[in-house]
Length: 266
Image (cartoon, rainbow, N blue to C red; front, side, top):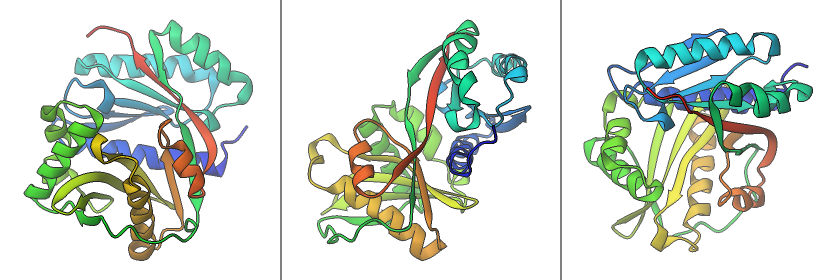
């Protein structure tokens, strides 16, 4: 079964997004193995060290997983494996998730849906309580790092290592921080790939939630990518918290993902 065009669009953008972390450290790197793309962020922090399935041949998957395991073992770091359901024949999907990956020492972390919006969301009044500023210099990168640490409960040392270096921010990546008055309260990362703009790291400080800032941030990203890059397709992997918002804005689930973490000790 060939992968659907929609699933490929979402998965390709995910590969582009994860490559950001390889550029955050001099030791970081992207390596393409048979059927799998790997990203090493330069640190032993599994969330940002990933292997992403790019092929769907069940006959070679075990060999590919062995190569991935050897690769990350040589780097002495933990990692996560992202499996895009749309790239796998349905009759093999359950076997991969329940047998092949567990027998290789993986356990399942989450099952985020891959979502796609084509066109603009329904019109809405602009939230005038929030102003967006792009991440362009050391000060705005520091703000992005602090906000990411608080919202997603990641140690600041890690967020600084991932987002604090100017070299990581190429033209394919745009960081945005939303301010309520002088207070930074929300953020997002826009990732551009062939045919789509991806929305990542969308989050709001806990004390500012339920005020419409999340919706304002999503709308801003879509409008920005549409007006300045001519993008007409927008993709993301949704959390449980954000799913109803994305559905309301017109995103549709076009594939699923399974995220596994390697059990092996380093």
